[in-house]
Amino acid sequence: MTESNTSEPTNTASDQTVPKAAPKRRFGGTPAQILSALKFYKILAYATGTMLLLLVAELVLRYGFHSVLVAGGTDSTTGASHGFGMVNIDGGVMAITGGLNLSTMVLIVHGWMYVIYLIADFRLWTLMRWQFGKLVLIALGGVVPFLSFIVEGRVHKEVLAEVAANPKAAKRY
Image (cartoon, rainbow, N blue to C red; front, top):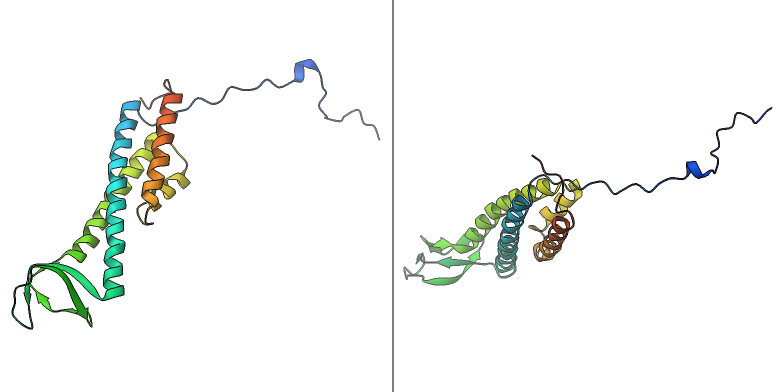
């Protein structure tokens, strides 16, 4: 057996590796578009986080105290006018008719706001060209109480740092 055909590398000066430059950062849009998407995301992160906290309070009220928050209406047992306040829901039936169920409104508003929040997340994610896991983490901010405030702060800092560190990053157009 001869060992003349081995393919082991030799250590010569010409074989030494030269450190490669870091790949150029590419964004999916201009810095102005990114900062605009960041502002839209920030507003919706705070609004969705606030609505989520109201939703948690509403769920505690509904399932912990068997009550809902109602504005207006008429008490169906006494015929008296109901202004604003909590109404007991014994057996799933509310004793007030014709009022505005604010607890249900919180559910609806949070749901639609979360949809718009997801659009803002997707817009920022595509412009920054992040990994898919980042989109999932940002999206979870709208369903885990207090997480939207934490994630928004980190995302905001990261976006500003990346845009500032790559002022001449290749743009989409």
